[in-house]
Length: 375
Image (cartoon, rainbow, N blue to C red; front, side, top):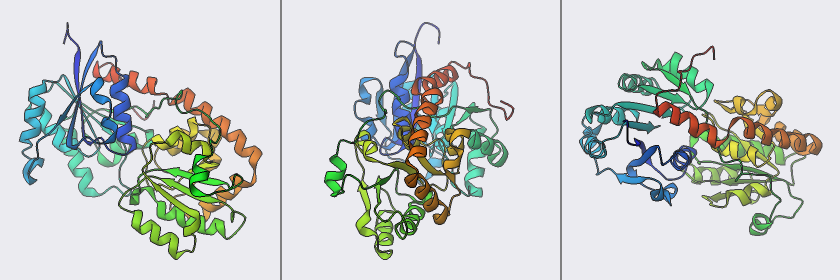
């Protein structure tokens, strides 16, 4: 590789909505173009996070593959061989197929990032990924909990690296409410907004969040509104659940939004009810914007909140505990304001995008030490 840039392929299903896709786009934008030549290969379609990415990377879409592509990923192999990368970096959902195609294309370095896993983690998924790890030079976990799971439960056969996700803290900063969301929803200025951003999928537990909001609404949180930005397969079920609980007028499912910074400015607090997480980008953005977080104690959430915000963690699958934690945060403004500042500082110090990109760059250079539980 001496005398030319390191050619890196980012391999993913698509570049549509989600924290993983955002991390990939930020990573590509953050790599030094003088040292790295970036390519992005999608198996399905490009999507919203591809916008402007062609200015810093070459984008490729793999021709349709048949049902045998898990064992014969010919079109993907051909695309990779045509690029001739030094590194193929796959992301959740394409590990097995990507590692097989990369090895058959003669790629020297194959790495994979796990952004999160199902909870519970199906036995079949663990077997498939363990086999993929035999063809992989290293797997990256975005949280220490996930790294430990890959080692102990999946039992991967390659080194594990720990690289937490990072965000642009200069973009996500504390900002006043610009009033646009409240005007859109017809909410008075003094209505507390419990806000969340994420994919409406079962693993995110928004059904638990809506049930918790029904419990809150029966008590001192009767004036609050629940606002969720995001979309997914559970949308219709969540709308029906809110209606069945009699709270449809105070539960606002906004769909996908591009005005995240404006939304965060309107939130009173930020919440998540996930059943599993890696290192949540939505959580990092909200904390960087100076929000008090109330989130479930799953995956990397505890590591993000750290000891100083541990009191804002709640058990998963527990609407009563989530409602009680919201009520505590809403009733104690002084404590909430204190935790807003703590949240911002934590993200600035530990989860900046520059740190994340630098660690991936070191891995591509083969200079990053593997993770061990002792570290």
